[in-house]
Image (cartoon, rainbow, N blue to C red; front, side):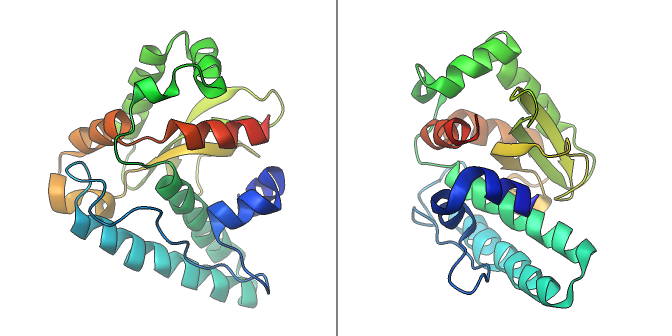
Length: 209
């Protein structure tokens, strides 16, 4: 997932979303907002631990795996780094459906899913029904350029071959458990309805089609 995604979005977006620096080593990208900026939907403690500990560990392990040539760990940690980097970029204080109106991605969603409300329903169903740890993602299929909703197990399993994610919601327990406990459904709805940065999603979508 790392190589295909990087290749498609280009060098400028690569730095922005994955945090590559000189020498080709992956780094943890800084958040573009304060740790408390996403409250009450994502609490400050969860965001700090999630970004500074969990995501940082994936980056550390990815760099180690690349040096050792460990394909399995590259896939797991590399995909984790891509998805987390995208997740942070897709969040913003005050994000909502209205912010998407008129954007190219909104028009594409309407066409692909017969309306935004249907898309919301299907995306939330996908996120809520993932078995165990994983992600819900809006992806672009590489051959037809069609939008699809994917359930991703762990970080790298069950993805359509070559598909590029343009919007993600993390449903690993560490993403929500401190605040929501076992109520994953409430967390997913809160993020989708209040935090999605549709301007960023539109920007990535335009870069891919």
